[in-house]
Image (cartoon, rainbow, N blue to C red; front, top):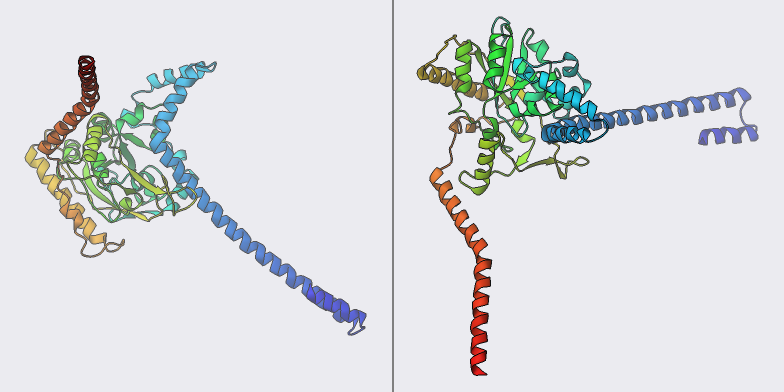
Length: 427
């Protein structure tokens, strides 16, 4: 603009020719237009980056809400619809639910369309999550993947094996992964269909037997071996697995002749912070009780907030998660494996997992001296005597607390009567 004004002033002073003035004005316009276009491009790039970040947050948030409340919310909504004029919709779905009840036990109903949704790519990029292949898998064999550690929500297991965001189908062509989770999730309306569409199945014997024996070859059951018990010990900076007394998956592998594949996910424990209760404490007793009777252990955890990473919330922290799939262990088919055979292959699996961890730990941010994985392979069990003693103390204090107001009331009534009789005597 200053150049235009200067050029215009020069014309008024009759300095320069008309041709020179036109060149000056044209050059100024071209320069100004280029600057505006460059600024718009920069602004567009910033907007795209921000939009992508928000889409990543939304994609993760929807899965967190699915994990925490979708089952209960859908059940309550369905019961509510039954009490409205739209009850026919709910009745038709319930009829379909009864008809389709056993589908999760028969491999489910996966959808490649759902597994390839763009939202899962945003989910992957939020952390980011990466899948590392170390060995080829034969399509003529079935597999049981042992996934470690559980973490709070098993985000790496879901993204890698229930979606195609990290390219599991391309890295292991001809292999169909099935992520196994709590059977109770498949009793929840709508949620069960959502989970099945991603290739998720119940972690029970019927479902696993069907997939490994009646579903052809090239199947891979992904079992989070540590389960809810392992989730109670997950915290940033700690690499612990619950494995010593977990041998059921080895027995299943022997019965079906399915190869065992250790899988370790570096960074799974870094995305949430959790309050860890010590063994034998009241908090751990409550968690163990829930785990025993309901199937999951309630955790007190937090991540980042929805609008800021400096606040607390339910969103996981954006820390990288790298899932490494190890070398398969060839397992023979034995219809009735002995305890000695189960222990043999369990020890082979543990050794393979430790070897996998030690080989890749420094590559993904852990120090060379990190040996915590091998030191916590023993599953510590709570001291029952301590728990029983604390339970007795709790019951005694509860009885004392409940009886105290009654005792105080009786004492006050007795004292009142004695005071009244004393006054009457004095009068």
